[in-house]
Length: 287
Image (cartoon, rainbow, N blue to C red; front, side):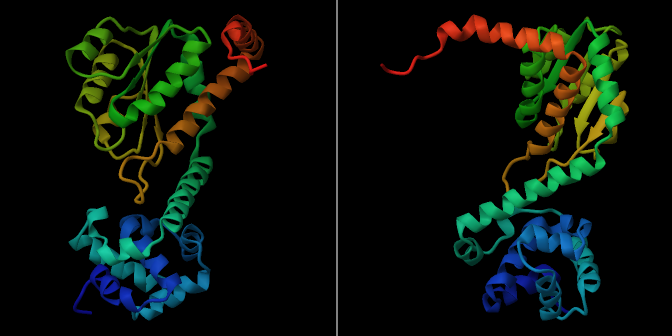
């Protein structure tokens, strides 16, 4: 074919049925992620039948889903970067906001299922082991990556552990880590666009002998080399303008849950005490 797959889809879009348009919208947004999905998984994410995916491929002139994916690979070699700006205006207008939100949420659900299937319980155990033996825990996250770091900090600070939140860069960040040592722990979260400050902080911590845990998408070897332990999770949702933190937050909750399970009596005592001491400040219902 003279035109690549993306051009072909855009050219045919106006003539497509509603279910084909839903499929086209998803493919033009997800692009390279489509290569990870079977026809059945893709159909589930979009909210159409498996047969619709096959018919869509044949409508575009391909014998089946496998041949369609080969055409997708060729198209990606020419245009490898996903962009919301590539969506034709008529598609944005015709795609109801409720349907768009539905597909975006289905994508998040798939990411959580992916986390469940790939999560290493052994790494969770090692992380909590490191938390237990550390005299001080640093939680590092910059920009949107600060969201999971803040979640971990809030939980463990509330449980009365010695914690520090590092959600700033530059010299101030390096000063905070200057005296970290082998008795401390650094848990860093970073996703594209990766922060140079986060990389430098991990290097400094490793140099000082601090145990480092990295939560990222696994696409930066430089960051991986600076960590003792790495959780690789997805942060990309092609239907959102920013990184998705759904999987990262689920992972953080799992780490907290494992810690609370090990120290259930003490955690219950602390949380009950907090509740009792703060009840006096609760708003009372009107009489």
